[in-house]
Length: 528
Image 1: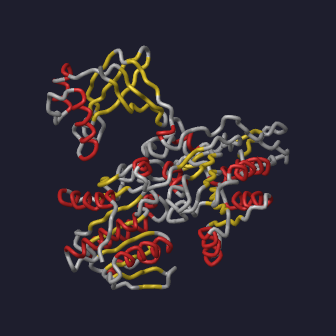
Image 2: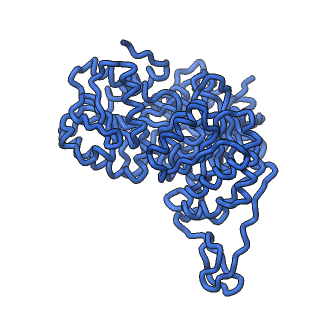
Image 3: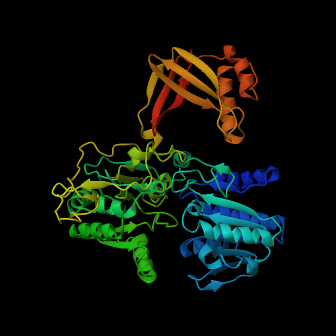
């Protein structure tokens, strides 16, 4: 039986071959949620063993659902695959299988038992930025030593960012070294492989003013204290019910366990079937709830921190964000729960009560390197008691010294809240007349030099960076950029060479721009 791959899945596998032909690092493959990472992994495994019959492969991930999902994807495509599972949650320990699907929590102490291994594939690789990163690193270090330093590691993810918004293949102590392949989520939607997501204006907006941060994210207990307010929940749920009238399956992301339960109760008041899934939900109950949701017997599920990765419910056609986050990865993963295709589903409605679209921009243009300016990680928000002047933490309801009852926070209702676009194509673009163009060398430590191009339009200036000295797709884009401006000259290999020919470049008469996070992106140019 052959494995039928979509064109981009084929390209992803070919990109890995090309990478390993000339590099020795640990690459990442970035495929948006819903584009079939499991099938891509299955195709890569089968081809590797077909080419080298004794290849031994280990597929690692963090939850039993993903282990089972990846294992079954391989067996559906290759029924006779020599595959097994090592997972306490699935009650299997096939340690000698040639292709071993394993949970990191179960196998991280058993590198010596695994013995020979040629290739490790890590699904949901972005989770290495979390608490189990140490388990992965210690296990891979020992496994690499067992295999004389010849181990190859590949990460698969939809969001190559750490929780603190750093790219997985950049920074200190990185495990992954490069991105071998990355296909844009917008391109997948335009080609019909993913379902579009559409924003809807909401009136209610969660207020996170005064909530502190730690490790690049809102402090969990302070966040829940700020947003878990009965009056806010009631108004937000009323909007969910109104907009969800023509929708079949609703998923609501909340800011904590109690918040998820309170939102569930408020939804039930409207006569809507709703259950809650959290990290505390017993496995049998969780399985029952999610099975009912996938089957359409349950209209809505609220959750706290458990359905952001590895959960597949294609019929989900309404996402409600009641979970503010500073993590671009978490934001994209939450919205991504609604991008899978399903029969009778035209799009997925996203109601962002949390201001995440305003915070991060469209999901197809987020920048994993972006940081909050001027932020003091870990700084505790405070409020001063007007009776005794004692400094209290912002989340307390009563003064710790005199028991003064602080007034409840005002419900923040913004008539024009949450109108930000979820996709860059939903952003209105603007054309500017170009009055002048300048070119300069742009250098960044650890990166190839690029050409900075600045367009002058009255008092405004707009810049773009042309990556002539990069490789892969950035170089291809740079060559295309050059050919539009100097079709009679070959594309230069270096920025210095480009600057020698700057006088020969055609100057556009206008540029088209659109907002991209905190910056402006140039999306089109017009020449005479």
